[in-house]
Image 1: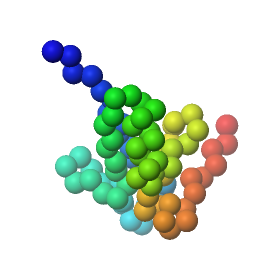
Image 2: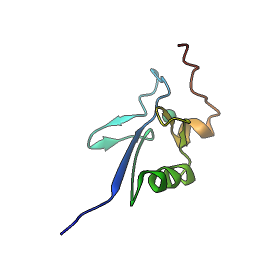
Image 3: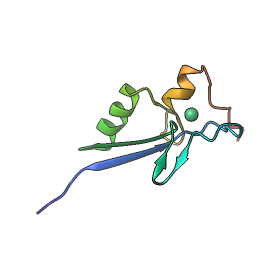
Length: 78
Ligand SMILES: [Zn+2]
C-alpha cells in the first residue's frame, strides 16, 4: 500500500500578542490551518482559496481572520 499526499500545516505569522489566535495543538484557533492534497502546490492553492495568504517563497502565512482585519505581515529586514 502506498499512502501518498501532502499535508500543509499553516500557522499565522502575524505577531498578535493581544489575541492569541494561533491556537495550540488540540485547540486550533483562527490562525491555524491544515490542508491535505496530492501535492504541495495543490495544498497551497486550497489554502489560498480558503482565505490564507502565503508569502512568495512560502516562508510565512497570514490567516483569513487577519486578512479580513486588513492586517499585513511586517516587513522583514535582512
Ligand atoms: Zn492571523
